[in-house]
Length: 229
Image (cartoon, rainbow, N blue to C red; front, side, top):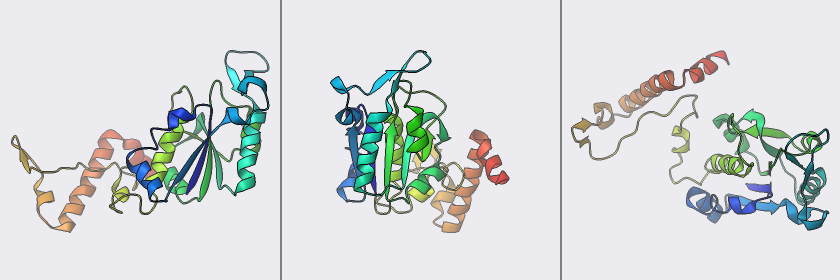
């Protein structure tokens, strides 16, 4: 998979993709992540990429021309499955969204900044708008890093244990069950007997029951959503 990220602050994205699982995914050749500085593609003096909004109001807006130029340049070089825009008013990013996007071959992600991007870019280039939560960040870079991480770890061969991603919270509409490791008895706090039974059926049943219980206690809306589908 290839992901191209359009940003005014590429430095913010250096660390998230240079360590741990994301680094491993790139080293294995399973994921390619490229950042593109919008300022390198603006026709305006002094690297200008933003201007005052028509109609007045606080906050600058990212201009359409620099964004259009870099998007069209990328699209002239290869076909992209989606052009994503990180924005607080986009659809809420969920595990099912990550699953769908992980099946794509190439993506462009636009990181908003200032007051956002000119609406004409959203209308004519963006195919999907995504929000990672109902709050506002200083820019879309951190949100883009979250999306890339969630997608990248799902690519076949990225995780050492192929079943690990399948056992994550939200993959089956439930929160993940509690997990334990050695020692089996720590300060008198013991691991549930079911996990020590050695019987896969008993273990699976316990984990499912715990997932349902935890979801009902902490995120009952997830169970209600599944029932309405």
